[in-house]
Image (cartoon, one colour):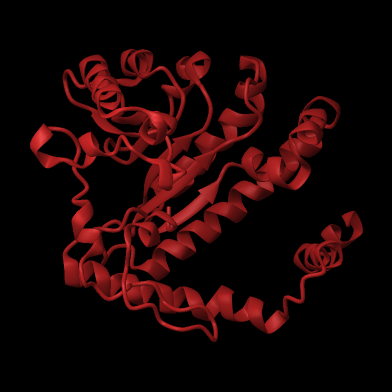
Length: 307
């Protein structure tokens, strides 16, 4: 694998390992189709949907933090060992992955219509990695690459929605520099488990923050519990502006969801997504898979799968 990497054949080597381990019969022409042809078909369908229904896209491209990718490539245990036993190699591959992910995300956004289709200029940037990192490890292995990625996107005219996994309350003092050197209104931190009241105190004079009604509460909680949680977030974070009430992640287990009412009821002065509109007789904007059949309806689940 290392020899192939040095020769620049990382993709072909990785494809060979993937096929050997999974027994997948994935073909090169399938890769060419989904890499070069399908994105244009996909973007054309969503462009038409946005124009016909006068709605912006949630994002144009998606990128991941190097530690998030390495967590998948190596596993949490192995990545943790790499950070302590092979720190320079971990940093070297992180530098490569920052540029690779930035290139792919900006390419996706341009295909989706950045500069023409509202929302296509947004990059959804996922910051993951091993949970519970000591501040020293975060400052050395996570933060530099997050900041470098955000700067790359904004300097090239994109806006960035930064989704931060895990509870990052201990690192807020570092994260407040996320907008250093950048124009206002270009970065939106999306905080999953972080203490929102503390985040507002530390970040509130620098950047708008988004979050973070627990997904488990939406699935298993009661409407009253959800409303109580929403009211607390509003009380803690809304004063002075710069706060968007949202969920920590998209809710899972929709069959058991029973608390969606307050968030979907526009008469309750809470957030409304006009869920009924998603189930009208609307042609699906989703292009069919190769050799597949066009679906006749778009549902809320279709749109959730695009996140």
